[in-house]
Image (cartoon, rainbow, N blue to C red):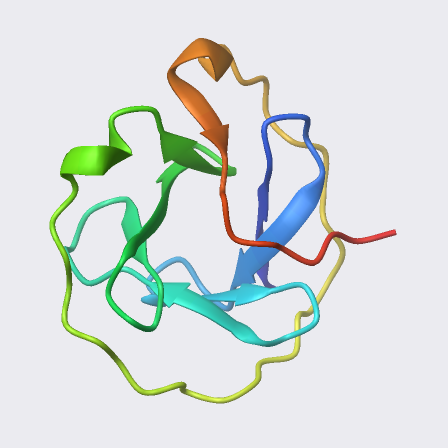
Length: 108
């Protein structure tokens, strides 16, 4: 089953195919980014900081201006989400984050 990620308001915005999948996809299945640093930080295909996974949220840190650049990656192709997004966990840190700046396809 896919692992869904939510924005600050709790709307599903992205998914990973598995917990150890280094790729993130928009809800329409298009490639959104990857986890090149073996951390929770996500880079887009060009290597720019896209956001961070915090719990079950895909958000952008307010201090994102100092994030390092990752190598660019090839688009791995589309992925098909499985299952349905569940209820997001409480998010107690909205003051330190923004929603990702790149347009993200939201469900419903």
